[in-house]
Length: 162
Image (cartoon, rainbow, N blue to C red):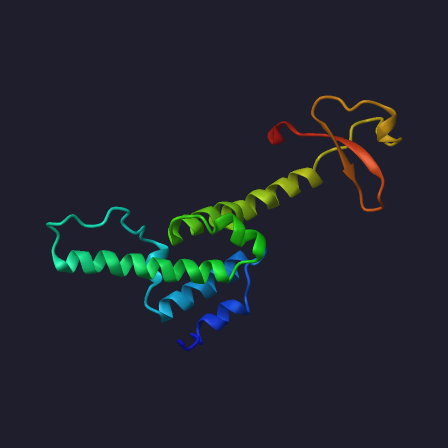
């Protein structure tokens, strides 16, 4: 029976849940770097095995990359919560998984969420919306917001949000 990799225990204690993506990614990179397979995060493995005329060196490089990518993928998946694991377990390689995660949890997604929240906070309430929102129909471009005290108000969306 193979001994457990002590470095991988770092990932077991730091499970990706979506909110901790930057820290999780940093730890994943450290673990893969310690195993000297961090290149699988940036290099897609070749999907086509070398042809019969390929040198032994090319075949060995292909087999090593495929094996290292498989190990890296196991590290990535083992350090995710169950929901994220189910979403990513059928992906082909480490780079595909990271690309997908980066779209949802990377810096660009965080700043987009932040800017959206800022825009919502800065929207102006429409005149005549202090009463119950349910007592009238919302107009085009209006949305219902719940303010700090639980009161629901209608707010007109700014043109920049459309």
